[in-house]
Image 1: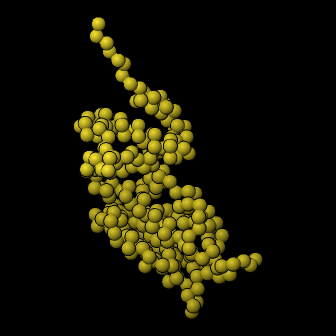
Image 2: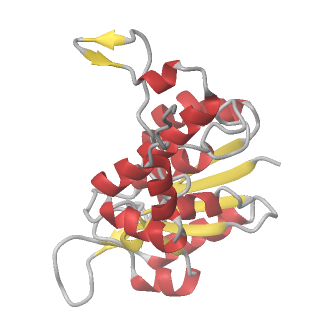
Image 3: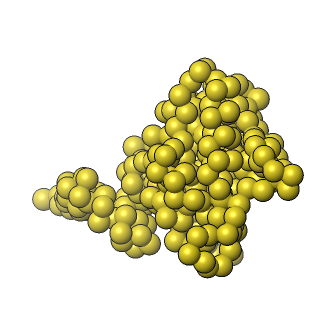
Length: 253
C-alpha cells in the first residue's frame, strides 16, 4: 500500500513544483506514495476566513488559532482509516536527521502541519500531540519549505523510488558517514586525475577505498558525526588503521 502524505497548509500551491518533479513525482506515478494537500483556511468559520489572531500578553505577529487547526486535522484524518503520524514543522522541534527520516519512511501515513506567522497556539501542541521537527537552527516564513524537505527525504527511501534496491545504501548519512568522492569521464581534467583504484576493476579494493574515504571525509568535515560514529562503531579506528597499513615488504635471499 502506498504511503499517504497529507499536508495541511495555507499555501498548497507552493507544493506543486516540488511534488510534480523528479523523484517525488516518479514515486507517485509508481504508486509508492500519494500526496493530499489541504488548505487550512477552508476550515475558518468567519467571513474573513481568519486562521490567526493576536497573541495574549501582547507581542509582534499573529498566532495560528486552535479551532481551525483542530477541525482541519480531524476532517483530514477521517478521510482514510489508517492512523496518521502527526508532524508539525517548527524551529523548536527535534533536528531532522537520517534516522528520523528512515523511521518516517516506515509509516503508513504522515500528516504534516505547516504553520505560518508567529507559530501555533500552544494548545495545538498540547492537544494534538504531534511530533515537532526542525530542519535547522533558523527561522523560515512558514513550515511549507520544511515540509517539502521532509517529504523529499522520506519519499526517496521508499523501496523502488530511486530505481535501484541499494540506491540509497552508500549515500551521505546512510550509516552515519558522509558519502565517498565520485568521479566520471574524463579520466583527467585540468591536471586532476581519477584515483587509480577506481579504474582497477577490483571491486573489493574499490569498496575498501570508498569506506576509507567516507571515514576520512566524515572525520575532517563533520567531527561531530565522526565522534557519534565512533561511539556506535568502537572498532572503526582499528579498521581504519588496518586499511591504511601497507603490506610487508618481501625480500628474496
